[in-house]
Image 1 (spheres, rainbow over the protein chains, first blue to last red):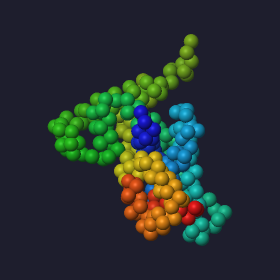
Image 2 (tube, chains in turn green, purple; image 1 turned 90 degrees about the vertical axis):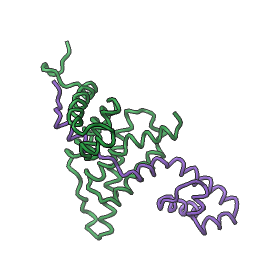
Image 3 (cartoon, rainbow over the protein chains, first blue to last red; image 1 turned 180 degrees about the horizontal axis):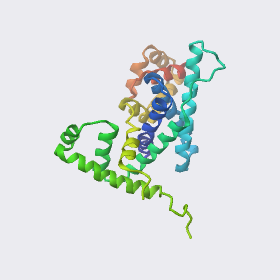
Image 4 (cartoon, each protein chain N blue to C red; image 1 turned 30 degrees about the horizontal axis):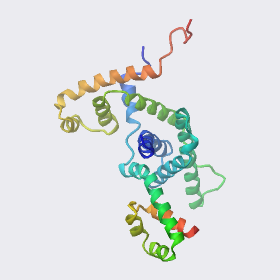
Length: 174
Length: 84
């Protein structure tokens, strides 16, 4: 895979996550969120060579996005003559943790057959109706609900495969 | 026994809607945009007449280089030429 293709894939993989941190986590407006989004990816691009460990990329992008969001909120406070010592309202840690969990689920979704990825994404993340999904995919609308249910079963299996639930003995393996 | 039921999984899927397509596309085109900017700036450094031409119409210069003249890219080109 060429560098440009690898870069496109990286942007594709993390775009929702960065967007969600800015818009849901930090509740930025669209203009600020777009600036944060482009700034984050510009900085990732500049530093990518120093990050060859795939495991390190995600926490680094998450931390970078948080920092850029905070900088944006602070600069907004300065422009509005707010008290400079007053920190902008930061998101609850719970909401950011939930976004990390959501990212894990999307990573597991990427392992599913493509038709499952498309149906789950269209219904739950894009809020499309059974009819719209059926029309787009050439499927009877009446079958979409059962397909969604089967795909969620597959997703649960894929997710558990990546994140095994704790055993009753507390995770001890003897 | 899984930690997650259908309701929890569907809620978590819904928490990450797609980012606006134009934002994603602009980020994906970053390497090409950087290459185009570098080439323009290098030529502008070597050729004063070309530099004046670029400064006169930044958008057109970018388009001629095959780079989408998004406001962010235009601003970056202006900054780079000012730094010359």
